[in-house]
Image (cartoon, rainbow over all chains, first blue to last red):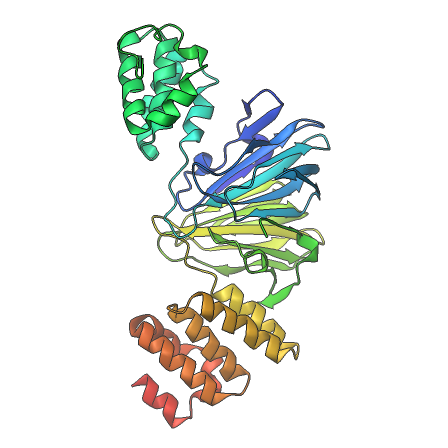
Length: 206
Length: 210
């Protein structure tokens, strides 16, 4: 049986506010919808502040354990276990903080009216906690499981730059730039991952 | 409204196939996936025994209490926080091991936009009908048909609902519409569904069966 307790899922720290991502979709290879779990302790972030501007997903968050305070477009909502927060509008800025130890939130989402495709951020989040060489290998191995997005090529460029692969990094940076130059410039502006290649004449936009 | 917030205990329960359904998707209007919960006390049935069609993936999350899952030939203990993933075409059911156990179910079809929401809308409308809130139940289905005018299943379910409500004229009208939308899909249901038994002696129904 494909069975797991959320507490047994891998724990991958995201950001610097205590949020732990517990990868659920990838654990079972689910392809019909997006789903992940998150855990955090008192005062820690349990839903990273974001909008769904990139993926346009309609989301549902379910508080499985503990208690959270959601902030939706600046409005605070108390959410004890059993609360369901539904966000049909991708532009709503959303975040949540845990109010009890071991608070657990389940997220479900996809873009309405379209076949679901796994979100490329899963790849970047996971790889970002690895040594650069391992991250390069991981992204290269798994990127074909995700839609081809500028962000994936951008992340791969970062990992290659950190791993000392100048030519490979520039190649991926160029691809990301060609796919979405506006985002590339914005992301790259203050990204120290590129410090070793930023002065190269081949660096996109330079 | 830019967002909806509900507590699972506030959502009106619906009896369906021997289980106690919490119609999450219907209540919130969630569009990306089928999303419902099941509630039972110790020994009670949570997930009605069933398999899903090819391509339909389903995930179950124990939100409260404790359940025993049966998937294929295997059984497993599932305390709150447990997640069970069931691939298409595999038998599954679950029973509660504690009072007030709740299991959330999320499902969809691989490579297709979510296009379900028929059976749970029918379940809500049928609960209202059985509780004597007939006009409210009819309104639930009317709204669903307006939202999805080309759904044969919604037309078909409306036919079943009117048949059960004792309105053969309306029932036949919905069933004709369902047949027009997708004759192949509707045929096996027309032939066997016990919801339509009140119509089976009606010559107009026999004509519909062809």
